Image: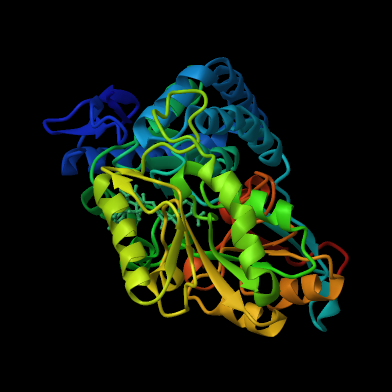
Length: 476
Ligand code: NAD
């Protein structure tokens, strides 16, 4: 597919193959943007910001609603593309594809709800007789950089609020999975979005992403991806607004009073969606020692029952990881944990990019499975003596995106909600749950800022203060 830059579809002198992680076959190819094309995108976006601001909320909402209908009409093709480029089971890809239209509708509404407020200036002595109010304005040029794991959902979580709020967007989708983003771009242009309003530029993250992030014409960078790249962005961005949705190694506590069957079933969902390649994937299960073996036993059936295979087959639960290198990394971390005293309860085998769903018990805090982000189909089970130790273990991480607890004890649940350092807290569920309207974003190394359409609209606008002096009949 061509990329969309400068209001037209363009190729390039160099191309990047898009490869199915499952079959290894080349599905398509996308251009590697040249420095000249990157410059064209930035210059166009500067003009686009003026056009988008001038459109007005109602016109922008109309376009987004039309795009939503076009996306809904093509859910099957989009799901197939997601499945092919990520190696994600088609059932999950269909779920992802069918959320996109609704997110655009939500954004079309939130984009018409952007308000300021009047300021009680007379509360400060000497400011009587002045009228103050705030205006919320678009930020201007927004650069959106997205990861491979949800090539539809995470693109729309950025571009829908950015466009609804009246910005021009340059989207740089993941190099491994850029096709879904290009289809979404097609739909928006077909829906009547001005060609300068959205540009989708493809190529390597380092060359294209960094050139965009550095540029002074860009006012806002909205990035979702690894903590390492997020840190790099903070170093080069300069004076810009940053939203960073980064890595995680989400914990969940299981207490003795929990519904164990439910906790085990939920773990089997929370740890293995998209082969564990979800930022809010359940990674560390911290289980009270009184029910430790019972929990492992309860987990056996649901996890062992997963069908691995062709992502395009309707009954496949686990497809491939994004690459063989990534699958080999996770398998290596499992081996290292076993060498340090952990035990594999289920799985552990690997075939190329396909890693079998794995449960590792007796994981301890120093192991990579516990400290780092695994981003693979592997649950690490850790023993705890009580709620105090369990909370300390949950917080023993540089990350803080999502966390869950299974308990019937309200006191423990509320203590967990207060004390666990994570952006989203789930009582009686795993961290892997999200509604697109809720505020979503991490603490600590998991990032800065919130997504969730309404919250993203706020982050993609800026506040101006207006003061009217010398009102007639009033002291100035
Ligand atoms: P990644 O950091 O390798 O890449 C993300 C994006 O950044 C891609 O588009 C890539 O091309 C681009 N990029 C790479 N180097 C760059 C650079 N130097 N400058 C600018 N852009 C650059 O991440 P990934 O492997 O695609 O995705 C997996 C990571 O994303 C995991 O760490 C996961 O936790 C994280 N993630 C976080 C969330 C969240 O909401 N917190 C959601 C999904 C994924």
